[in-house]
Image 1: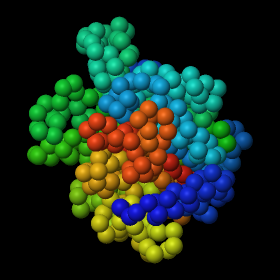
Image 2: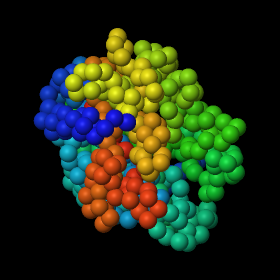
Image 3: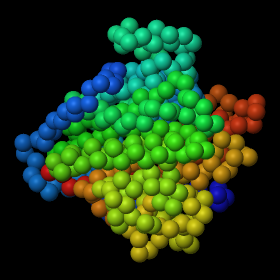
Image 4: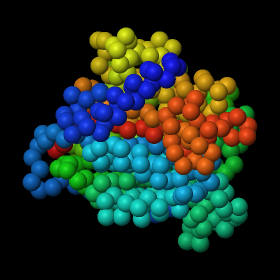
Length: 406
């Protein structure tokens, strides 16, 4: 990655755009419930106000963040004010908030903090997870969810600036033969449901659906997990076809655990549209971070911000399968981590490439007490083993698009 000057200039430019220019047209910008595994019937709600006319254009803003609430934060709520600040920097306020790896007490914190402004919903990825700070989750191992210790729950969250409609959990499969990186059975196994809601949003007079997603992780040598992820993404995209056909704007944010480049696998072919370079796809979505993020002086794309050594999202391409890394460097000896994009913010085809804008923002702690954040790894505090102190091993991802609602 290039030296601080380029990143600092980018950060300053982005800050100005996000805090001042987001009220403009997007074309002028930088570019608690337990999942019911057996219930696959999906419900929907029409959130269109009676006075909304067809073809209304609005700027829709969203954030997605794998906050590593268990592994990195042990279920604690004392550092969540950093996330609150990141949300508040996005001005005007985001309509949708998608969070992943959220421990249930953290979900309750968001509910209480934003009561009266946002409504939040939750679905578990794991219901017997000791990483959220509870050492014994055995009470959750029986078949009765009513006696669960919810402090052992970790999963996905959707927040809406307005009101949530009925929960729409989309079963994604991929729950059999779960393996870790060494090819050993994964214990405990995960449950994969996309958490979606039809939402009524402040300032958006139309039908919108928001989804928070966490697909299968790990990379075993036989590619079992790769095939499962591809199938999960395809299942989700297929299930959302009906919503798009019904005239809804669909926004999907989350940790897909897959890179965008088609030559590395067809994981996201089902999301990217046919005009996404390189290679296209068979999907109906645009990704928010799909411009070239060139140097502020116009010298061209900076490979340090990209997932490929030679950036491919250059003119005349308008929408691309690329973008900034969403993985935070773990230590000074693991700089290759920055070239991994696995988190996404997809807007359905109710938008256009020209109005898309996305930013992937790392969150390192710059002090041992973890009271303040820096974007720069060279300013990050380190633990006793020389690893950077960070809020999450993922970046905080803000994005927006001008959409046509019906």
